[in-house]
Image 1: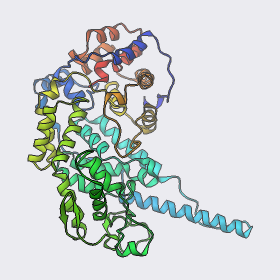
Image 2: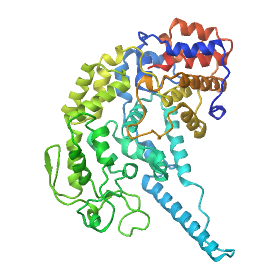
Image 3: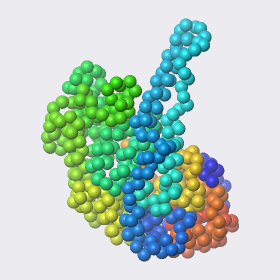
Image 4: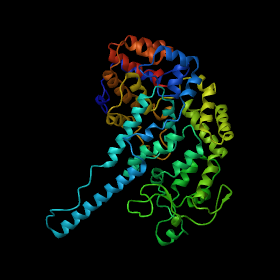
Length: 495
């Protein structure tokens, strides 16, 4: 099972080396059947228990099937094992307070040069690690159990678009999972403007991009403190979250937006007026007066000023094109057809950012089905597709988290606010393929799937498997080797 996966190391034979070469040399003209396209291009791959009748039904109407399973799934929001971001932050605040008390007590004891029999309680074990692992378990168990995985892929896409990184600190580690559950998951088939507002007001994003302490220079708080304006969140809202690079906004627009969203914050543990860890608007630190963004003036109107700017950014033509391009690149091709991008952008504008309408327009377009296998599965897509195919549920999240680290896509830990790369070149290195091969061998060894590997190939890939892949799998020297060749094949690696 997953617990047997090593971080690295693998003794490969000729057929396993062939699997790596096959993945690299995959013909860009490979065309899967429609059911395989539906599972691989749009979802998380077929499960080991997919029966022939269901595959036939999906093949008959793959577009209809995807639309029928595209339903908002907020079940994780009410899981008894998971807390909301506010509760997670309070736990972190309490831990920090205990650690501070322990440090102060130690200094006092050293100053007194005497043993201390009684003192503050020792700090609890790192609570952020427990929260992080619980969130990882819930996320990937959901992805494994989901019979289709389409909505989960949308969650993953938007989570990477509006990413935060746990490398920022303990607060980020404790809220990354709840951020995805609260600000992303409910809106992937809703209005983009609603997701945008919720994301930018979420404590995880306010912490990650330093808006929590941003203060208007002319605000009451700004005049009494040495904290000034921080433009990080405003810049990424324009550059990454909405308009995109080269869309015509200026540094002046960034600064104006930064002023507009001053006061967007959340309090710490000892605030008597507001709930710790929950977003609130602090008029005390908000820059007073009207601001002009992209040539439009926004009157001083408390929190509504910033929300009005976000609403306009969410409906801007540049935002429509930016989102359309990213969706087409993610689901279809690294260099998506321009006609498809334009079509999606038009639907986005016509529906004022209705993401369900945009997603269905993507599904309906022939380009999404006719494009050959060019996209390389990212590490997390690959590991989850393999676990679904080989019946390896991630009961313990630690090995899976370690595997993602080794493969270069650590969970909720991109190197910057632009998220993980989304093109084949980001993942198709020789070292990356070697590491995948190592994990493929170990997963194959641990798989409880019965029967011959070629039988599983018929379930997972059906007629999409090329003659070369079928021959390699059927001639494998062992069941383990056959399964490893299957999940390292170009038809499985590419989507």
